[in-house]
Image: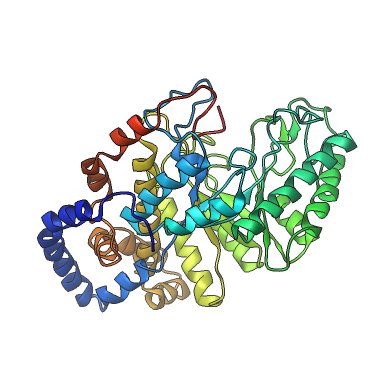
Length: 431
């Protein structure tokens, strides 16, 4: 039996107050879509298939590059993080899995943690390793690199940590490992550029060899930071080459914030999908760099265009199943509210992409009608599918308006009483 953190009677009361308005909006949208030959019930069923993983570290207050401002009632350990994640899923019904980050989330009893997740109606997505920070008691520093370090001992330590993450993930029921390294150089000449990638591949082969047969290894690239002159895995081309070198279980992970401004991310998505190496996403939004802003808060059209390519890839290959996860940082908002909003926005883009008239678009493209091709996409993007998303949540037992229901529940205030701050503990391991 799944444990609901927020009293279901409160959620039902919230839904009862909005049900009539939602039905009216849903019927109006259904009539408009029907005139376009679209079945709103089919779209609602599509919306209910969507799921995106939550980042365990995302339920804590994140930080800027300079400071972290703790929030009231933020989780102090991984068990409390799961409680917050359960609230998000209870209200959105779109976030059934959690992605853990080790050693931040290392449990003393992995089996007990899995049992807690089961009781909350959650399971575990890909686990994440951390070799971009030194941890208390480790023998070798990552100051000058981890998987690419000049020191063989440091490289071996980093490989061993990733293998340990795999072992923990197996106990938790995960099926993937995400590997991101901040390795690189801050000065020209600091690294032999080819040699650093050779060391990365040698280390990655050791991790890859430890993967179970049904696991994937997600290789995450990032243009810059903390290596500002050159990052070893800086772009999709290097990520792709590494994944090709390692084997079929190695895939590329696309973080929407890990690119130069104005990069055509949807084209990267199309290329990686075409060559069978698109493994998944870290969804967030960006204005200047790796901002880790809420998904859809800056450029919702880009998010839609990404899902347009994913919809095309799925039509070409029904077995195409990339992993979806949120990855964002919160400094001025309640993290639970931001994660709920982001989950809804990513789901919105997913449904809008399903609205694209593929046949009409293909005809416009074949006729070289650039304007009508663009308008075919804009027609889907401009359609407000909010009633579909709300109805999908309602039918699945969630909240019509997740943020409003959350605020009415008083969960944050109750958490503040239950979780008094303690030194050195926060939901974010970054700062």
